[in-house]
Amino acid sequence: DRAGIVNFDRLPKEDADRQMFRKLFHRLKSTFRAAMLQGLRWTNEQGKKLEFGETEYRILTARYEDLPSVKGGGRGTQRLPFSMDTDLSTMEIDKVDYDYLEARFRIVTMKDISRRDEKVEDAIRELESKMGLLTEIPQRYARRILADIKNGVLVPDGTKSLMQYIREYQERNIRESIHEFAEEFLLDEDKLYNLYTNHDGDVANSLKLKKIEDTVDDSRLISHYGGRLFGARVKFHRDIVNYIEGREADTPREDSDA
Image (cartoon, rainbow, N blue to C red; front, side):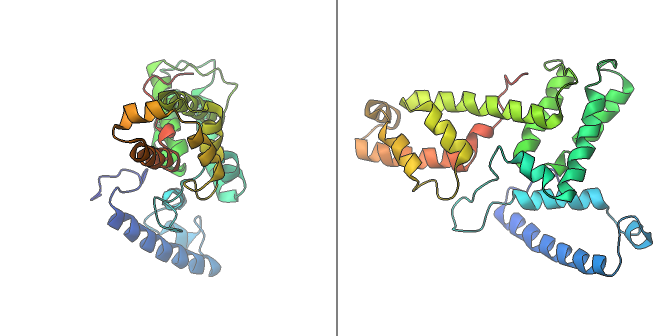
């Protein structure tokens, strides 16, 4: 509440608050693990006496997964953008969340129901309130998809799942952003896209990044940053690393549509 976050749908901005959340969630998870071993279930008498339920616990788990890695210092590495299939299906708890969201989305995409039908509006509200079940990046696109449906920008045809729409929005958004970034410095667009979507580990020192930096147009660097070429290259290296590690191409664009 102090951080102004509703439904635990995102992490607090302050690092101190995030570290406190990390500490408290560890404690909560350990307590639940011990309680489960002693017979606690969400649906039994003990579980029903709790002040929050299984959905809230899963949302908190998703926020914990959103925390940047603490390994190696620096900015941390966010979940890679096209790993959603694995994230949402390899663990049973994620599969339940996936099925729950998809069931509500199917109501929204029914062809024989008006977009303003009460059932559809209820399903959209339910989806919006449970978006916290998704980790940060898929959640951004899911919110954009629902906004586009409500505004009439997207008319779903009933043949695609929510996850399929998320992947389509994400890939289009990343490609458009990378096109602009690459064009600014005359970079190889395909190589930058491949590094952005498939990087693993230390981006700053990767051979793939070095090959991309070797193709940068020097005159564009000086024009963009000013000063001498060496200093411009140092600034460019910093910015492209931040661009990739900070998942900056995953910021939804205002003109996103189906």
